[in-house]
Image (cartoon, rainbow, N blue to C red):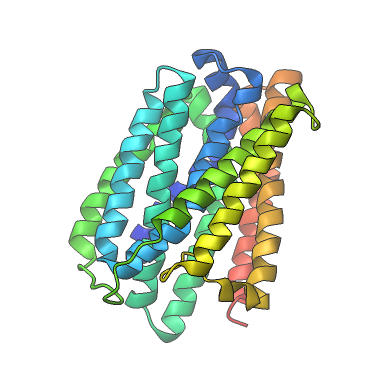
Length: 315
């Protein structure tokens, strides 16, 4: 079960970085504007992160296996749609659907782990879970280079389809149906909508500053709109009976500080992969395979560090 859930999580994390090496090929094939290419990565991360809390609530309130299967099915279908996308808009929409699937399957899988294992087994399972996620981020750039060079850019998405179908079949066979953690079925849909909308408008505003400037009416209006949407999210969380992010969460200093560190580290890591992938191929004329191999030292460092961290985590 741990191997099955880990494979699904590996696929989710892999898809954050695997597309980076293929971005120049994707841009040339589909006619992306240079400034719009980052949305192939950004929209996936935004939907995954923005809807993760809602996915966790669904896994708590309903059958966690059903939520996991739903997320896995959406992710697999969206991967197929991404590989077959005929235009930039179609690819971005498919990547958004991939993010939705990832937001459902990730917390459901984690919930299955915490209910399947107990004691020291649970500690080891969670350590392995963290290591698998880190390995997925590191392996993505290498796999992206190999797949793009050996086959084509479409295969950085299509490779998920057989893996996803196999995972669906094994889930039905290995994982028993679960029961809801509680009776309440209230879902904070307004909170989920406002936080995703606020983050998307914020990124869209920042994305346009290179063309319109920081002081333009467009930028200031979009930043104000983003701030308004996120403020509405904060109000919704205060008045909701079942908030996605209870206000009391902010009083947990260890959670807030670790979340802030992860925010910074992930931003640096994703930005590093994105910018260096374009630099190596557009400026230094490296092939997709050479670019993937160029990230190998970084990938190995992350893998080694994840292995060491998994051993230190219980202490």
